[in-house]
Length: 191
Length: 195
Image 1 (cartoon, chains in turn yellow, orange):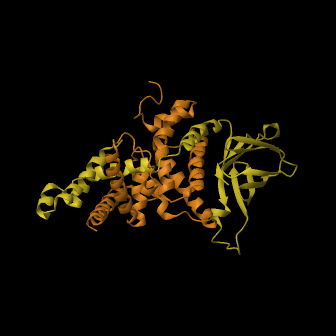
Image 2: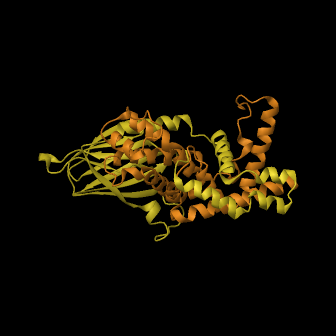
Image 3: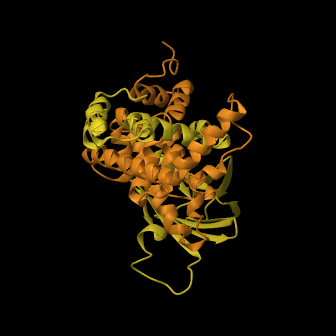
């Protein structure tokens, strides 16, 4: 679906640059095999690669289905808490540790609420320990691929859940008491 | 016109429709951009589990941001950027685990031998020889060329803006680099035949 005007222009440029126009071929005196090879313009070669990739490495069906199903997780009534810190991405070089660190720290920030999470991995199983800041009691849903684990924080805003499978996760924090703040959902992060 | 019925419906329209609850429009986005996101995971050479995580996370992110995008018409570049960032995150994380075999990426030997489609046995042999040559020539390219071409190989074909987003590079660099990489691929193909 090359439907952009750019592409046509670039194909021509590519041909010129590669010196594969017919005059060039004659001058170079390429044998028939060479002619055949060079006769493919850039678009043709790219199409051939695309067909090969589609045959060898198609998007797995179960992932196509997962992409369709992702729509069901859409929330329309919640503030978004963005991932603002991930020890995996943001801290490895700054604070090298000996051996392999087992805990990963994630921070999510919405207006008026931060969610701090510590993830511990054991094989393909994950354990979450988290805290709402400022501390408050609230219902927290751990949204995980095809299920939801619902928890209530203690008076210090702490919560914990074990035996979660590895994969993308998002937390949803119910509205505060007396509607002091609206519900909050975090960015999805693979754990 | 029902959403998703038109294969060339502008992505921005699909985003707006999906944001207001149109599930068919969401499916339209999935069909249009899954190939691109998958190609990003292949271009960054992620293992199967990481690739699946990045792919799913990217779509889950879009579901959450669908009504919040500043430029719905650039949703393809937004998805490519998200997939790139998540791929880089996954690469760092999986420094902890056994890396995948580089040769397993885009390797004709992985082809499903029993799936030549409607081709006759003779055609299938020719197809697989050509696939083999292409695969070998491709893997002989420098890593940056492999990365760029693997992105361009997405189905349907991505725009240069989307490819640039997937690489974190300026759009203007894509066309010239593409031409250079395809020329090198032709050279490798020619040598492969000679040798």
